[in-house]
Length: 262
Image (cartoon, rainbow, N blue to C red; front, top):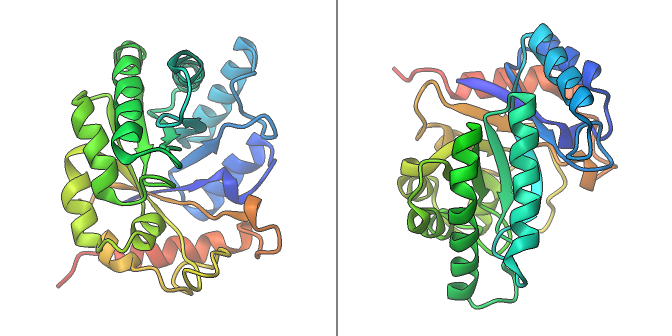
């Protein structure tokens, strides 16, 4: 199992400190939140992008994903969505990241309309992503929380550069069992995001293993060389414990759960 953490858990932290945390706590990769309030975002110049890529390379830490906020199923014209997505794909290419994360964002639309929007836009973006060597991953989230919903869209696109990102909290909130989520997502799966919470009514992030999410059942479905990323949502819950002090115990918890079974 290869481990990463999301910079959503360390809002605004400088790149050098993110790399140091990953190295000190035994994480091979990082999912970079790409937002203007963060050090890494699509507004960076070519020189700034090269500096970030070089820092990660020198630190021996992989940039697993550029986590953007494009909503591919949302109502509206296609071109602004495609332009934003192209910018994220270019940022990922420049940083040496393997993936771009996108959201569905189809709330308020009929499911078939939301599916069609997402599939059309992802299909249009896929050839450019392929040219740049980046994979676009649609996260189980918001209007498409269930694995079955994301698999429906990605399967319609049918392009190797468009895949799925399994956020285990959202499939759990959708009432989908881990084995069912994995069964539909496996042909498209990029990697898995883990987290823990107290209940469906309290989504404040907790240390891994301290909440109710079926983490072991999710990890049991994965191949041994899979990437697993801890998305600790400190940015949305500023009162939660600070992530740096939890990283080593979280790593150990994941490795214990992912150990080969007798």
